[in-house]
Length: 129
Image (cartoon, rainbow, N blue to C red):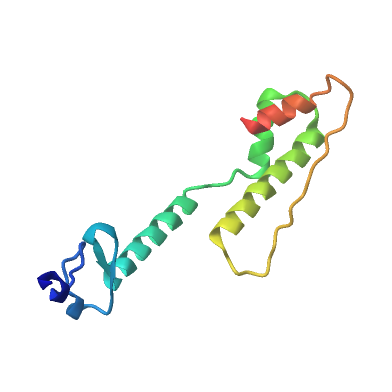
């Protein structure tokens, strides 16, 4: 019965319930205060932003140049696919950053048509790498 009246303390910073606005109790007697939660949210947001900033996009020109190293000819297909891949990743980054701007990048599809042996599968496999 003595533990019932004992003041709760944050398991992370050690502050008592009287020193902070709120303490949340977890399993096994672990407690966390609102200030430590705020600090965690800040640190996680900072890490997420750093991770997103680290993801640089290749330009369509760079993608096409990479395709040129493996595929001979098919310049119009490589150009179209380069722009489509660039827009795809640009759209993913926009959704990931949860920006509230009015510009929305629409989803698009590309259909590759051609006879057997024209390089459709090679284009797709090279892009996947």
